[in-house]
Length: 249
Ligand code: 6PG
Image (cartoon, rainbow, N blue to C red; front, top):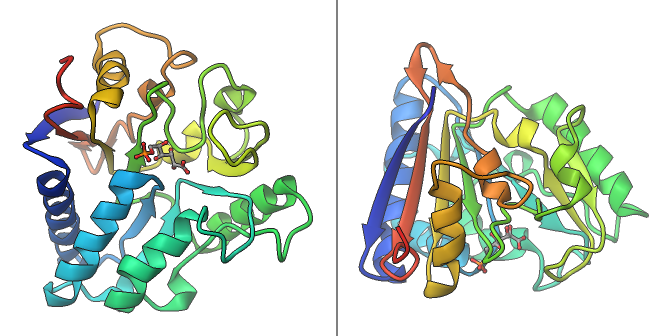
């Protein structure tokens, strides 16, 4: 059974710095236990602030960046150098600054190497099967005003994909239209799920996601709860919010 923790911060800057600090501490702890933690990053505006905070604090931390493996919960199927790529910002602001080896940064294929978004989804699943460790240390997720997370959108058939760890998303309501997303099955293979949300426009979706009752088809963020437990300790779902995003709780 997972536990839920809600952390509320005055503003997006305090939120971003707190998430960065907790991630660094969690990576250090995982490595102290002999692990090579695998993390799934997310896209979006608050994620970009978190990447900048990680790029600033990461080099001063005790994390051995040669023993961190990075994935994305979702990625846009666009050119590799497009500003719309989630990986582009993460690399420039964070990963390149701390020195995660390129072999440990697993990007979803872009339009320069795969013909279709379906091919990119299949290739990403293959990469996870080959280089994944079976469970993420942390899955980080933004949330949309409609309650989507990763590229799992309300009412979309991707929500019901049960026999695959990745899914090709077409006609995304959030541009760009073509994306690759981890499925709930893959997102839930995690010891910790961290939702990050900033701004009044997220408040209603956050409240729906945290309500006692609701349907993941209407609020996909409700579908990510992590593993039931790992080595007997419950998975942690943490909501990192600024005051406006928490204003409907
Ligand atoms: C994406 C993201 C998406 C994002 C949310 C929140 O590729 O678009 O992964 O799930 O995290 O839409 O984005 P904002 O923080 O920009 O609102």
